[in-house]
Length: 295
Image (cartoon, rainbow, N blue to C red; front, top):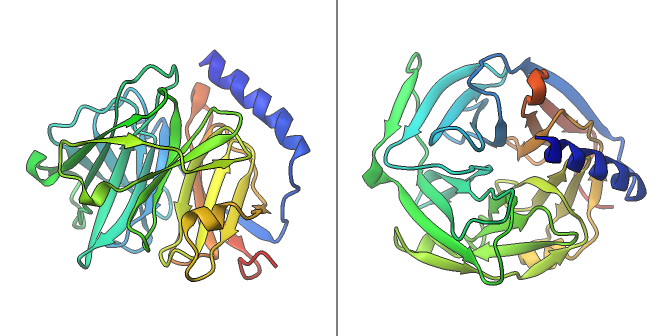
């Protein structure tokens, strides 16, 4: 815990020297995280099956489960993953395949850099009925992918799935210049092992979350102190997009903000935080006042 707070202090200092924030963004508090089980929220994604709902999860120390919260941050349903032993789940992403909505749970955290393998778990997005408090996804409905970095173990907390090329993109956290790692997970059979190779390096550090808009036209990445937005022109790859200079969006740092996602469109994004030392955490909605272009 002490090391994590020292990291926060360090990064707050170095962010003073980077790009200024775009002020054309309005922040709104949607609701306070009140349920004691939502104590270390580390990832969030908008539900595609249930409007105005979000999937979120805790990181290390929790069981393999995800939480459905509404737009007031109220817990609606708990979904458990049967047969999954979670180590340090750090992000959750959405993708569509054959007309169905799927979730990708990223067990990729490694604070000490000692994990030989990290995992992805993907499964069809559940639909929690009104009043249904608990749901279990059977083990046979969950696909597990093991992954290993080609050079060394490292910590990561950010991942998204490109709707165009159908690959997941993992972004490392602690390197002074973080790497981006493409993952062709949809073609890998359950239980297989993939090698993670860096395809791109970003001139930033302490990345804690990322997401891509539903149509793939915008990518959002956050660290402890800032939020960055990339606009993607039709036909551009993820690599071609991320080598461009991003737009820095207005963002007020949270106690330990490690989660971000787009809403139904790319003019809105949401954040939520862990609750270190019992500090209060909220679900925030950020509305961009102008078109999210870089011009």
